Image (tube, rainbow, N blue to C red; front, top):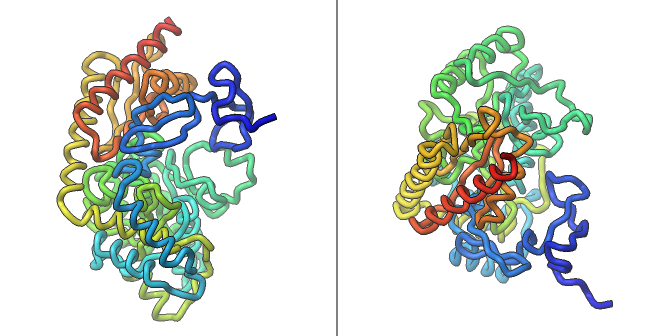
Length: 431
């Protein structure tokens, strides 16, 4: 018997594949119209020959578009120059160049060093260790609590899964959450203040997403200012998890640039390499970097594939794209375009709320029966829009839109049409 093709059986005959994909039922099957085989620009091609317009930037990862020549060429050159070099007890030139590029972008007045990692979840695991060791090095070893926000998402590694405040089946994995706390963010900081009055001397850090990735909820400015003031008062570190918001997604290069004071640690991953290489980076602020350096402390954290030459080359290439005004101007244009699309859906009664900032929007969609789309029907809607020709990200009560920065007016018109067709088809089925 010959080898089966990727799309064997098409949409008429589906089977469980050899790949166990993330965050779906173990018995989920994928027809040829759901097996991606290539991607270019803003489009993904499937095994049945169909194409879809991507409105998620490849899970936030590909803001410069699929197959970006500058990134691809940089990675190819790195593979020939040095296919692998390690950061275990060593440093190499490409990693130094990439770290310097990131510090130049984020501001050397705020950040001094870079720890490379392999994913946003892994980077948040590293952060949880780093903040606890920092407090221990300065003689406050009782500070072991790491505080996150309710509804937050920081990954599904052992530590980051525990830190995530969204309900993600944490109980099934015996995650250790004894040194993790979660607080409300929509109350101006009252919940956090109460926690600090109870356990302030035990808090090592507070970790926040400038826009909560699960529902595209921006942090209120008043809450951020309260956290910054409480940091000064209580001595904890503030971590900005910008895995989803970094590299222009909300407007500024980094969302935390709009805060009145910088965080102590900045976590980056999505968009860091334009999706070319699995990578993350933790930018370390001055006081944390100095504490470790002054004491000659060893941070016991290492990832074999972190900061490799190919990773570093991709990071440097992406950083180069953001140095000039061109990409930043494109972000502003695309942010306006996606907002206009979302406002049109609200105006026509198809959406009831728009959340988010910049080119990171969440839409709560209308429902013929409920006040807004029930969570149980979100997957059906996303599938209907996919069938209509576009890829959108599921939200709590609708969809999230994260277009790449090269989107044109024609792309937005095509996306708008696909969303409307998908909504209409789903509404017909449930009418």
